[in-house]
Length: 295
Ligand SMILES: [Fe+2]
Image (cartoon, rainbow, N blue to C red; front, side, top):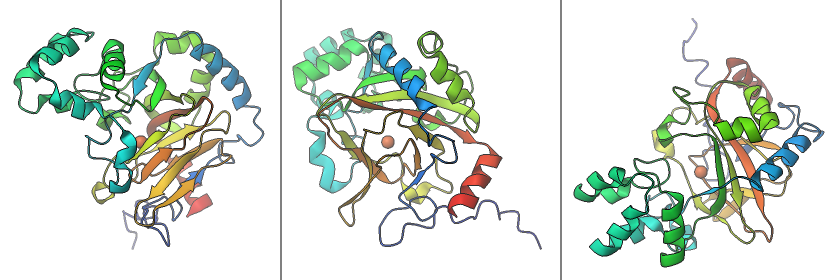
């Protein structure tokens, strides 16, 4: 008899032996260079030139900065978030709150949050009221908030995290089409049936990506599908095993998929580095190739 769930039960979330990680197919992360034909570096080199030239010309946003108050950091790493804007916002007095909301791109979005109990928790990245560039700078300069990713560019903006695989109503921005023609064309040929989010995540020299996870493994039947690309392999992402206090560092990979319900972070380095992340729904053919390569 054929079990309809055979496709779903391919052991992708069987856990990583000797760790507390969920992983993918028993590994802390999957290196995708071969599956995506990126081994030679010829494909990504022109993208790197394009991306660097665009970084030099475009305004960038910040992201991160509230992982601790979101409750998504492991206990041993919470101190590394330094000053968290969720905690700062919760403690603002009325005068400071008025100053903060006046710096919004759309102050009306904040008006009803002011009246709502706990409303300030709905502020920030991929939540109801995104921070404006001015608010981010004020939080950094006035309150010392640490934003790990200070060179963040959304090529396909996504308003809410849970919609990151949903393409409805989304498209590449005008800036993405104008400044990233090679990159957008490359992203469009990746093995997704739908893309709901695409962004560049850059860290300034000496900054680090705070360790966090993007969901609870207990809530997960299938891992969230995405590909992270490293046109130059100088950004050291790691998957963090809190139970064993151990990093599993991604080194030298051009493309990776990891289980973002496992904790993960980025090591500090004395130079700028970035990655390109694409979230969506993999094609069945790519899922089959992943299973045959790694299961
Ligand atoms: Fe994450």
